Length: 247
Image (cartoon, rainbow, N blue to C red; front, side, top):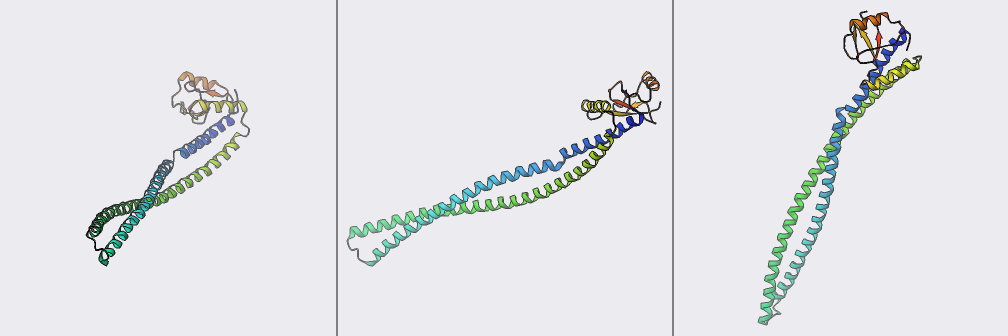
């Protein structure tokens, strides 16, 4: 394969641009904000699930409290009617009086039991409400942090996109006039060698694999025509001669 020396040197410029594009792609993938956003989204989802469960719990406790309040009120009303009947003096028979007094005692015990249940429900509701309020405040804080981190990430992605657009424009300019066979070889080698398809020969060392060439290889390069496309014997990348090759 042959290509004019200036065309081969342009391949080094293309390699530099491609390295920049690869770096931008890597930076996009590895921004620490990606992980932060994912963690905050996970926390947000968990908090929302807990809030839904907390809302269901408080709703159940409020219904239970309403029922307990009604039960206590019914017993109080019944006891109030019985006490009024007892105080009226209309009941004179001893059996009826004894029965009424027994019912009042039973109602008093039942009222005490229901008031204990009512108090227990109220305490549970108070705790559940406080927990729900705490979760709601925590969710607001996490949502706020998520918004800040997301905005930071998006700003950085926008900057990288801008850099990428400039580099892509430069790449398009460099591609103009490059021989198709040389470009195809370069692209294949980039795939095979971690994104580096062409490397400069500097001070008798391949910049791709960083290995110093042997005297035999140096002699071969000296004898090669200027337009011959050379390959590194070690890494097989396209080897570009420069003014600093040390030949």
